[in-house]
Length: 390
Image 1 (cartoon, rainbow, N blue to C red):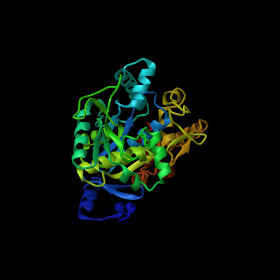
Image 2: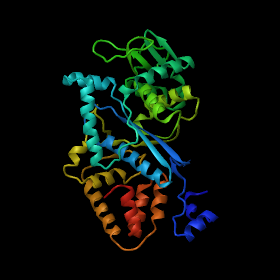
Image 3: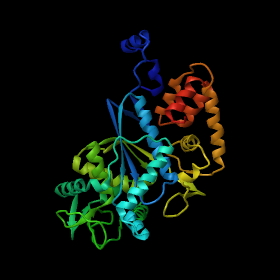
Image 4: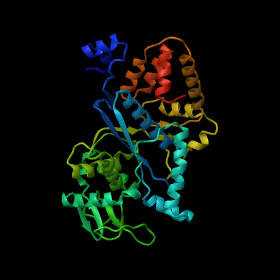
């Protein structure tokens, strides 16, 4: 049944609700990526969170603001939404950053996480239901590694437990050279001669020198990045999730391996019923990233821009689209926000269902904004409330 026809359905339940003056039951699904996502009772969302070694930039903020809107729109369906956003506080990039600063990695992680939380509060991002930390889930990674070994999906060599990843790479549909480049860029070392296949990734690996280490059946070591997210997701949500959220750049290798590890253990396919990959934020056509240094920091922007304006600037587009940040565009967003406030001040009910329908249709914020501006009144107030713009 088309999404937009739901408000025209008649049934004894709908008719009774209308006669009694009660709201009709909310539609129980939305669409993501063009596919329907029915929900029943609850909705489990896993958001790939931060590695807390540096300040929060606009690319991070875009992902987490979109995840926040997703949770709110899922709530419109009447589902009980449980959002998990992890913290990867055991990771080699964090260790390297702490070493350069002369800090202990735990201390640096806690400090940067506090700054990140402050930035998210400023952007009105709701606190997730669960915020698991990698350092608290080491035992879960060890259990995952053993389960993958038992399933024949992993092998051990000189203290490293490797996940067999050749099939994961093949399922992406990307060409081999692109896959090898992505693996290398994210630290999976496809040229490592210790593994059987270039696309195998470490679930558990030995620690040396000052690297943090925990005991395991394969010796003292630390978990791999993809295995951390797989273990934390299973610890919180079990064998599957309704929506997996992260930046588009995490599709491969991170989300592909995370999902494959869980599926190999749980034997539930797919791990995620739907995926929300947020398009990257660019500067002059180049991805905004700490590695390139072309960062626009959230806290810097918020010194001159109202949080609601920056939040709308991140949202007034299709979530999957990559886009270039230009500070001059913030003035136009401020004008748009002012127009929404003016529309909301008008009397009249409007048709808030049109706003809800647009948001449930693949989180189409531009269409929802257009409906709110055209109708004004309650429609505009509804949109401002749902997007947390006031």
